[in-house]
Image (cartoon, rainbow, N blue to C red; front, side, top):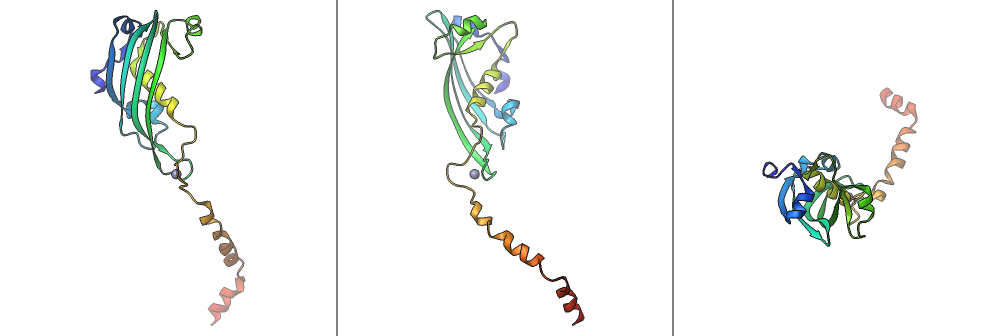
Length: 168
Ligand SMILES: [Zn+2]
């Protein structure tokens, strides 16, 4: 799927023309995200619409996927569904970014080309929690709290007890 999509896009031109870019890409193709995943299999589906809103170039997007994260409580895999929409104001300077209406996050375009997958990856990174955890209580610490006492006792066995057994 990825090879059919453009690697670079020109957001300003796309908003002029009112284009959409829809598609999907592999999560493993997004290295900064893949680093955070317990399992990088799977794809992210996205729909990007480019248009003008009162003279402002806007990119409106929707991304859907299920990320496999590592639960920070039990260290098992955790399904983290992502279904989010975002609105970016396409700007070519920081001054323009400051003037954006509040509901638009800036997407700065300049001399560097805009990489399509960077936009998707950036939005996915924002949806990953700092400490992912299962909703239910998945790890019970009390289960392990009695164990150390018994081990300590066996260690304090008199060393000569072993000798005594050997003599018999
Ligand atoms: Zn867990």
